[in-house]
Length: 167
Image (cartoon, rainbow, N blue to C red; front, side, top):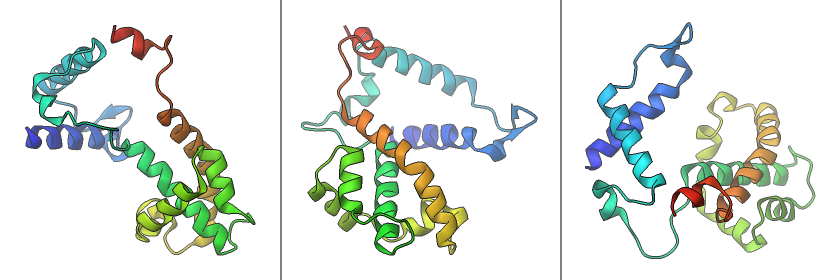
């Protein structure tokens, strides 16, 4: 099952890459069988049922962060680090990040301790070695990252389509 999951992730991520598209058409299409399986699994989840092949993934406690949340945290850490270096003007980046992301200052410090310095090479690879370009990208991405992160932290509202489909 892990191989199937990994294959599906690789296909779906690769499908969305700009180098897979030529004149508005995918160079490598998603296999029809995989697309059908994925559609049925999404339909099951939206119907409130966990597909049988996913049952082993159930865990007690809070779920791990979504990949998008990890990327948003990386953006926050980059913002904080670039502010500390004086590349982005912010006298209190910890307070700024905590306020925008809706977390405590302690959480921001934990993110800084947990996120490896390799994010300077991996988060925005086209800006490696160019702190000015990186600062521009981070400042542009920061408000959107904060909004996404805050939205992911909120439970679905009672009237959202996600909660309605699970009933």
